[in-house]
Image (tube, rainbow, N blue to C red; front, side):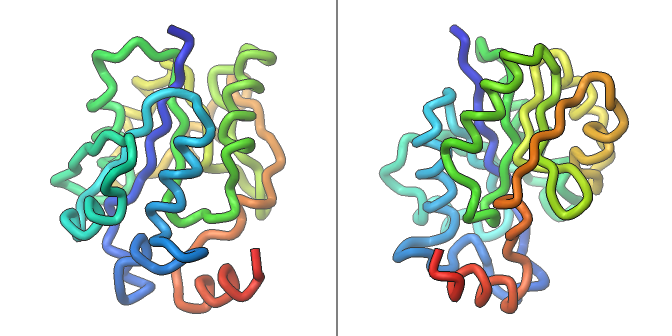
Length: 196
């Protein structure tokens, strides 16, 4: 199978928002459901949602969708633990790699996610990451061979260090859509008010 999984990281507590941002309304449905529907529409392979804080409410938000749930009991320690929970869930699967994505980047489309896998296949690069706001980050594709680098992350580390630390293995793709992430009420107002 030439499948790539998509791991949606949605375990956090939305401290800066003051309430679970994954449940905020976006285009008539919870932000998390929007992200899951986008990931499913990419048709790359299995979609795994990593949950932690507010687990039951999050489960309800994605009810009826063909997703797999991975629970991260250590979510409070940081993003690295969620990345690892998602990869652990996929350990036995026959996949060529995985896309790491966030539930709070609502402008990212299914085409952008699918494009990461296509760029990997064309370039042969183990890592294909989004470039925006002067840096690189998610959504990002990691070939299976690079999973050990992610499994070695410290609990509070995201994947940016892996991307920037392996420039020969990484392809950076411009993705202005990824710059819109929702961390604060102001971010949310911008995302919704943009009429996107």
